[in-house]
Length: 179
Image 1 (cartoon, rainbow, N blue to C red):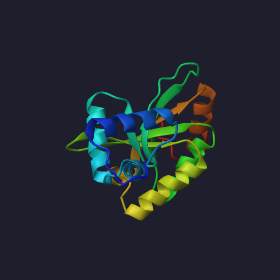
Image 2 (cartoon, rainbow, N blue to C red):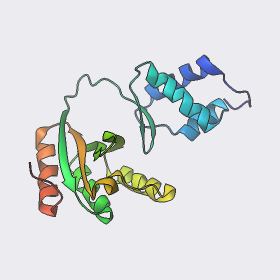
Image 3 (cartoon, rainbow, N blue to C red):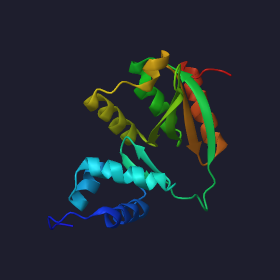
């Protein structure tokens, strides 16, 4: 899409959906905006419209991602409760991903809104580094600041053994809240 012609409405959303489905990695709003010659805000609106059609698109710290159905690979999920200071965030995330575990989200309990969930979607140290850089660049506070460090994570792995190993590492570091 190197000509400077804007791609309009339904056609643009179809292209966005196709690109998201074709890639197994997130695509940034800026990249989608450049490919379609529209603003990033238009892309945000397009993604909202696609999500309203119940399409499995999520916004991660690395960009937008289409959640493909798992067919051959069995995944195991676990929600854990942890507590730590903001300065310990990198260590906490690395302790988890180093065991081959994906951190899908963070959940905090807000006194008015109830559970607030934000997608993280990090699976390795490089993605952890990018997540922390993005938080730093935007000066966005961690959601866990709302709850004095207490928060939940949804973890996903291809075996319960990996989840157990990650939880053991968190327990040894003093981050895991025992149930």
